[in-house]
Amino acid sequence: MCIPESLNLLGSFSLLCHVHDHVWKDRNWPLETRLKSTKTLFWLKLPGSASRRMLASVIFVLLSSTMLSAQTISPVISEYGGKKVSGSFTITNNGLTPLTVVIEPPQTLAFENGQPRLGPLDPAVHLTLAEMSAKIGAKQQHQFDYKLTCDARPCAVTIYTTITGPHTASGLAVAIHLPHTLYFCEKQKGCRAQVLK
Image (tube, rainbow, N blue to C red; front, top):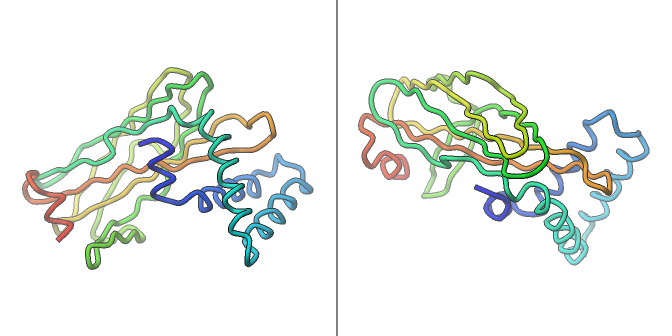
């Protein structure tokens, strides 16, 4: 999965909000800059600011595409069967600059009337990740291993990774989420379809 798919999943304005969060939380930025980022986001949220949001989204896509468009996660979806899972996913950095990858808290994936819904990890779902972060050099990749058991099957879990690179020339810190979703059933064949029912 790359930037176009993430934009489709989250929406460009949501990604802009995420960029603001990173700027605000990074105390290496001067307070004045952090306050300006909040003002800008508030201005974009004002009624009648759809055209401003569209323009800001276009600028965001142009900035982020040059840095993060070559970053991928694979596989995006995994299906498993049996009593327990030992799996992994790989982040590939096809770019020319190093990246930092942070694993967000895993979430339970459920479907209501065919619509996906993410929530806190169910107590009946037991997921262990071998590591929660990594630095990936240019033209390199990193494998994240995990183990999963569920008290009741089928179950589904989504693991989001947050990928950040160096600040852009304009000083903007860009981050993007890439998800890995795993479906776990009694039998591997048709597991995802079973969860979607």
